[in-house]
Length: 262
Image (tube, rainbow, N blue to C red):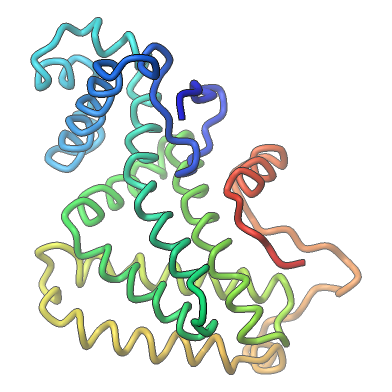
């Protein structure tokens, strides 16, 4: 892919990763962009997003600042490609699980939960995402980026939830998908890289798979209502809460290539 990202659009999506304008034609340009992104990620992992500047990236790359600004006009622009770089293999692994032939929906859901938990024990995920969560409270760009990341995860989970539990409507499916995602992401502070419970990840994963898969398979709207939830009028259209405007949300869904249930 060699098209230039649309910098006016703050959405994040793994399929949007591309080399910057001026880099696609020559290998040296692609290598330079890869070096810049690797160094930018390392800065974030070591010192947080507040330490990420174009000048610091240039210093660590041992190049002139102009060699960085040729591709990236701001650190926000740079962060977008860093996130996309991180998400590419992540999204590919999710897609492989979801589209694997001869595998049941239950096995796919368990596979996704296991993959997400295994991923949060890496230095990259443990170091990067807590920075993003904190920054999302103050930075609108990062807030939308984080929202986009988890929208994409829910889009992977919702069809599986619908297949496993056809009694659930769109609102219940996606909210349950959000709960699964939040349950796994929130585990980072306990079983993430070099965290106190990292050694217990196999048992923790077994508990998470048992509880989350069973919840998805068995929960009913009536049970949810018994705990105080009141469903919307089925004749009205429910839309997932998001920080993105309607056009950006639709573009994110369309660009992901993920087939969504009605």
